[in-house]
Amino acid sequence: MISQRTKSALAAAKARGVELGKYGKTVLAARNHGEAVKRAWDLRPILAELEALGISSTRGVAHALDERGVPTPTGKRWNQTSTVRILRLARAA
Image (cartoon, rainbow, N blue to C red; front, side, top):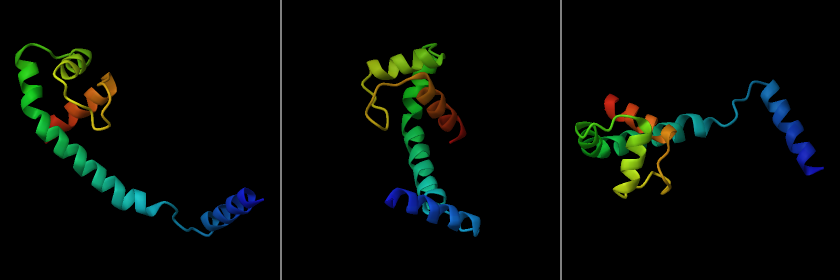
């Protein structure tokens, strides 16, 4: 019953035009993006070195970062998606 009442209340608030989840959109998104840009900036020398070695594919960069022990922001292994994102941010920074 609690779940149903909560869903009904959220649907009613949304129908009235209340913006739900505003904190995540305004505060957290900006903070997370700032941290990602800083991380990309910090990795620029390593990424430039890999490029100089001729490693340009996302899979190759991911493998090289793993071999060098460079952690992802979550501490996991690098994959193609995270590599594409960090390369895009590093080029824009």
